[in-house]
Length: 338
Image (cartoon, rainbow, N blue to C red):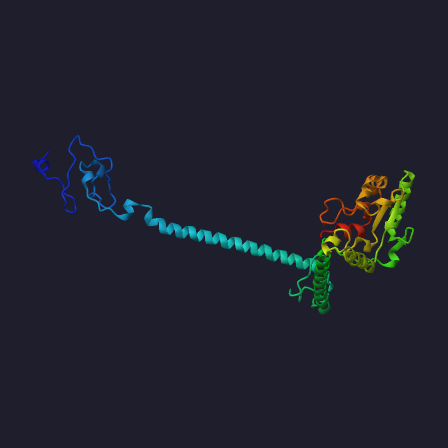
């Protein structure tokens, strides 16, 4: 080995700064960072074979201290773009699904190619703003104006029908002091069960059968009151109220206001025990043999107690007041969703 090689001075850092070299046996501090990225060795030299590779000066850059920071901005840009694309795709799918449902509804309302409109009556009002031109054609392929008018008329009828139904429902749900409104039955629908007491025909037939069955068991059911007109109920409510000095709320506990009595329908009947007249129209009727028989047997003839104890309407307990629910009309009248 030449003397020039032995006596050569240690290679200085490129920036001219002299740094301390590690001598044999010394160890590099654990927290020392080695940087090669900005200071490459000369051509043909392997930095890992150089004795002083740890002394090569390197200018620390922000990316060297936190290599992820330089690309974080672009990463957020990519993530944001992906989310925006996903949202746009979801909105597109939802719009396509909505349009498909509208098209399906249009096809249910009308049958193309026949020139006739098929109204979905009872299934909700048609949208009269929706264009019908081109949906109704004749065999020649021309638009049938009559069909357009028909579907528009069906839409108007559907809207009017829905409004009338909503109005009717609102009227049915109105109460006065806990009593629902009821219409007065027609005279032609009533039948006499004796003593001038009138009931709806179906109710009258059911009561006759029930009274005959009770008589076979030694029970004498006595009808006390049946159909009442609104005028009669007016006298019973306001006249007795004034006679007894009752408030409207007090009177409504025992008698319905006019237009709100079940007796208007012809489906309701007040029943007494012919063998215990002192209990008529009194809570004491529940102590009679007639009431005990009714509790056990009345459901077989489609009669039920109108105002049991603790009823939701807040009307006083009336063990004598029974109503018929043996056909569709009576069932809907008394048990519709109010």
